[in-house]
Image (cartoon, rainbow, N blue to C red; front, side, top):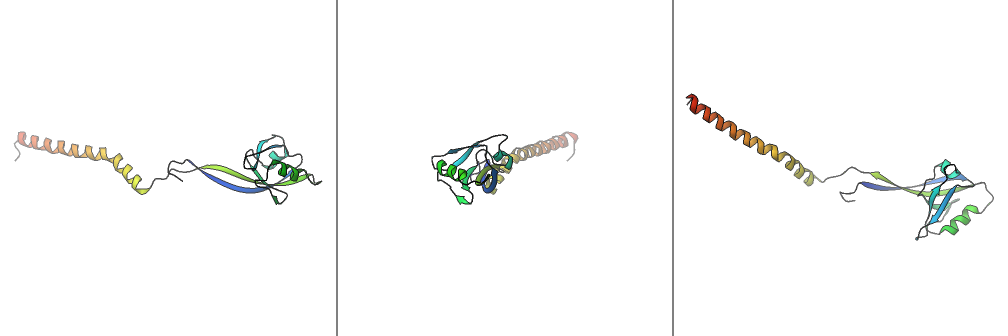
Length: 141
């Protein structure tokens, strides 16, 4: 990951048991992967936690990653059960802290403090000159 990235992608898999009708619209990607295009607000899939964007990779303990929408729909509709077990893969973006390597951090630190060091030297020069002038006019030797 480069230093300019703001997020990190984290993927995980979870199995949901969903009563039929599911209450989702499934669509197929060019790769043959099937994803949840939308979830009905009051649908059974939404109630168990399936989200828009989840990839459906398995149905009733059978893997269907990349097998296409028709295959996944057939697996969901086959059998007389009132529910179906969906294995989904979810990818989320997690914000990450900006990470600087030590050399960059030290360079920034020195550039930030440089004006203060330069001012300190200038103040010291003015103070010494002031003391010399005061000493000369006050008669201190």
